[in-house]
Image (cartoon, rainbow, N blue to C red; front, side, top):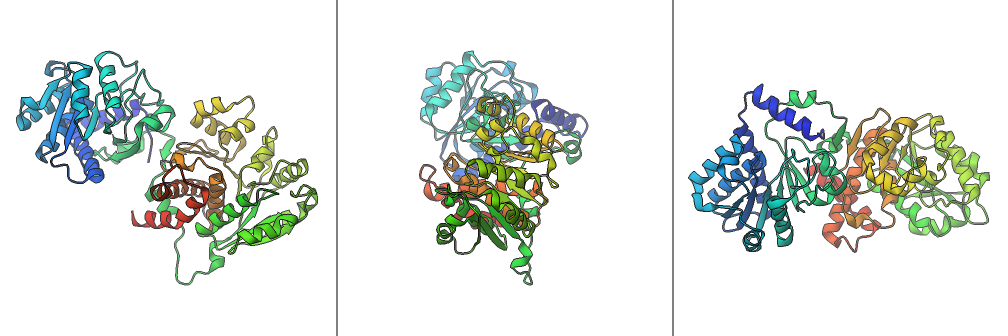
Length: 517
């Protein structure tokens, strides 16, 4: 699904109204209906619940008036704070204001008078709906709108943002002075870029997308090279399983990983590859670490390789590892390899000769620091999976701060310049491909910020590559499923107590959930 800027969404709205002949009030009605449906999905029946709705003077406020009318019809206790009088409302918002008054009476709407008044009303509410400011915001929020936003955040009630949290820039995701901290954002037509960048990620909460009837031809005409990964897309690229299939059907993933103290990385990577459906998995491991790894793995095979005195891969393993790679459908290189000089040299030699689908992670990325030109020698473009620190080491003159300040731009530039698929991990992971297309993953949570989850992602990608997915499809599908498994693990264990093994255990459930959606 395409992600759009504010200008692109405004163009889509305008074409729908002017060319398709859909009244703006009809779009508003559909938007408000979508918000109510999302509220019902989260809370069940809204009858008897007290809902405070703060409405601005633009079309965002008009959506809020629709929500108020529909909730009143469902016997919710609706309290509406209007930041502007009827005479200042946009034409369509004014029409929805009048419809609300006809349905619920003038007493349902109170003019915003002060922060104290707002705090009193919001404190006694079960749910707050933010319909203050929409995608057109470009300057810092001050005055009564600022007071209203502060009151919403101080109330600490379940907060639903209409289209975009008020105060968030629709394109950059930065906070314009102050912004609503929503638990749920219901956005309309197509997702806005600011919901997936910078502070927008934290302020949006869960994002739900509501179809308001924008003609598909108009969406197709929008020149957006950024998309959000969706469940239907992931479902469409996963291999089907027939009764006649056998383990060879689903590929043989090879994993080159591990060193003293880091066999866990190799084990988690292998388990994740199996859990995502790979038929066979073999881990190449330094000989001195083989017994340790075998004790951790039951279903995966191991292949001992020549090692150094420091219990890492030795230069002497090069030819055997090349043969190992040749015999596998896809490979992953990097988890727990170490930065031993001899191992780094070996890793660089292997990367130069990669001739099959591959994932490079962790210490394989460290081996490329200052040597990223080696990637151009790969016969098949590999997938790289850096976190911001590793990304900063891969890019000349980059820092963690500069990477995080422009995650989409950083990933896009590197993928294009080096001809690779790049998965820049973090909140709302960014996946970029050599031709400049970018996808953003909507799944995942802060509980996944724990040791080993990156090894799990690498294993999942290798497992999907082994099953025949293209590099792009494998990168997108694995990232989405990895985040979904993390979300399921958080539901079971809570975010603070999650470990990478919890994510692995939830991979089958993520696949089942995807199949049932």
